[in-house]
Amino acid sequence: MAVNAEQSYIEIYHEFQDTLCAKSAPLLNKQREEAFRAFESVGFPTHRMESHLYTEMTDLFSYNYGMNLNRVEIPISESSLIQCEVQGINSYVFFLVNDSFYCPESSEKALLELKEKGVLVGSLNEYAQTHPELVAQYYDQMISQQKDGTVLFNTAFAQDGFFLYVPKNVCIERPIQIISVMHSPVPTLANPRNLIVLEEGAQARVLVCAHTMDDLKFLSNRVTEVYVGRNAVYDHYKLENSNVQSTSISSLFIKQMGGSNVLVNDITLHNGLTRNNVTIDLTEEHCNTKLYGMAVMDGKKHVDNYTTINHKVPQCTSQELYKYVLNDESTGAFSGKIYVAPHAQKTEAYQVNRSVCMTPTAKMYSKPQLEIYADDVKCSHGASIGQMDDDSLFYLRSRGIPESEAKMMLMYAFLNDVLENVRIDALKDKIRLLVEKRFRGELSGCSGCTACK
Image 1 (tube, helix red, strand yellow):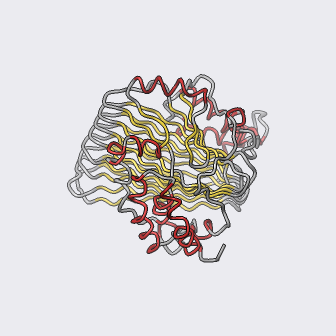
Image 2: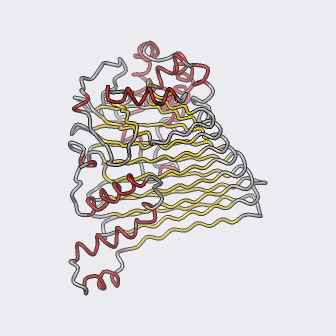
């Protein structure tokens, strides 16, 4: 591929535009051309942009990835798919293979149960064709003014993804689990596009498990839009444990209506490079938002979390906490912004980033931000970057605990307040086990779903 990554993809778009449109719903195509023109103008983000000081996107897209624009079916069987069931969680399980929705026979009963409640779940491309009026109310409405090149790129090339619609006052008791796997005989770039809608008073919990099935270079450029209606309750969990050659770019956009309650918990245990963008808009009064995240990195891995919480109206609350544990030569970055609009009085917003560098060669960059234009508010932000507490380590070792075990215990305790904000008990127990394995060095990659054994 040419050095100029943007030009390469511009040429691909022109060459395969008819194929893209022929394989996609008219609704997806409607937004495609405008997004592509915007992408031509802005290109991929670079280090010159403040929002991407530590993650250069142009380099990431410069590799010669394959793109399945012809929607060629990749042979796969249900038995070969990663089974990421969490004991006791009793979830509805669905799959995204690269960017294609896949419902195995074992999940057909789940589809029927949900449809009986009026819940729609399945392929975004299919629902955009069968329910275009419903999907059109939400698809690309929240991010149509985005200037981020990776989001525009997704809209220009997206052909499928996951769709969930929960009607008014419907509660989905069981979590919905989306096992998102990258699988291909060649290095592949995928652009999954997800749309989740909760009407007034609805309740749902979604768990996204991101994995790889092959030891190849993959790039996943995922965009997820979530609309949370008045007095609705929504939990969003993302657990990432992919191979070291994988690059994950994830952009999550959430719009909250009055009285809604949202919890986001983003956990990165293993990947080559991860960039998470989270934007949450509080658009009506009495919204409550909890945004949590953590990363455990070693080797030369890189994780970058970029978050924005927009308090656009009065009397809303938000809590944000991100924690990092960095070992070897790994790199972490956090940039979090809380915006309080004029007249957004009685806002309560708190943001904290805490990081531990286990070695002198690990690096962490932190930039918490407050932008406040109202005067009757309670807001705070803070960050700390440090090393292992030698006194605590000495205390544990003096009681006969081996050094490696003592370090694991301290780091486990350090991350505990993020883990405590998982509102699914079985999932919380499973993540605790995975974190412990991660600290013991037992999760060295994602082969045969090491995340789930």
